[in-house]
Image (cartoon, rainbow, N blue to C red; front, side, top):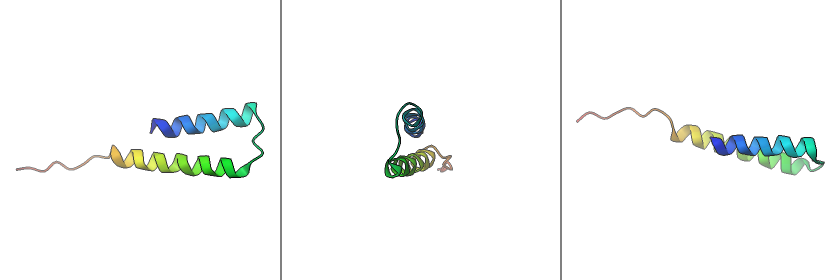
Length: 52
């Protein structure tokens, strides 16, 4: 989930300090952020414990 935060931070900083004229890059970064966030949440979900 930290990767998703870093990607959004990089996108926000580059759009503030630079010229983000390429909408394709913005869309790719947002899609990758959503994908890494979903994967991270899936990996840290609560799993039911199996009793022997």
